[in-house]
Length: 390
Image (cartoon, one colour):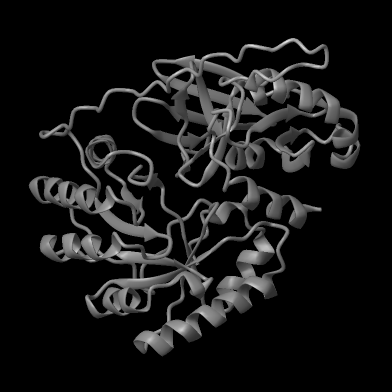
């Protein structure tokens, strides 16, 4: 069942929150209740992850409070604190996570995968009446198939109402005007911070794109080396860029997309196959590994299997936001985080249109502040959300 849910989530991540009548819609359900379809309840896809309003989890017993721009959510002895202004999230043990909360449509949206994992809940995506429903449950709900059968007519009516189509009585309905997302102002960068990171690891997640060459140019110009976490699906690799990454002194690493339900042998095999391809292209292999949704979602036995095979597990504690924001905003929010810690930071970047400029600005700031950085090597002690330093 967990593998089915994982596959369904991958499918829903391809769906954008586009409320225009001509596009597909995604509805939200909590246990056996379908939420009203409007722009304050529809799930949103941000930075490759699915988000829902925090009230979805509140309705399942997760307490929530907000003070000084920080949304705190708690349940079952677990807490997540989302700073809306600074774009970071940490738990009760001060572990950081790369999925911040966002202000949109007059409410706060939080990441589904992180919140479900932390608060012991489940989620699935199902197709009902030709539409997609993202369903969050606490284990007390009926099955997805029973829910789909019971809610088909209600979902069709909600879709018709939202799109302004005639209802069963023949009367046209009027759709609500979509609200514009609320975007916070770009924060100011502190040029005389009272503290700064002891060390920074710049990491790039995902397959190379048409923007990767510019990213490599920016790193070369700044004299910085980094680590590139490449998907184990080598069909999305760009061979020449993979060769250039290694040739210019950066560390190639591998990126799993695994859940606690996956067999360790399966993703170990995917790592082996990816390493074979990497060695064929560059003459080197790697034992540096990250997981798309974080190493903390892996079970202890899964992590044991990976470390026994010689792999070292890494997570980025800070997402720069370059995939979903402008270069200026990504730089400013990341530099602001730098000024609030003296710890070693692993920064997650991508291969987007904004990345190269964000890297240039960030590297210049690091030079002004004397912040050292380097690539990850096998001898470096791992940093991850599971606190597994093997």
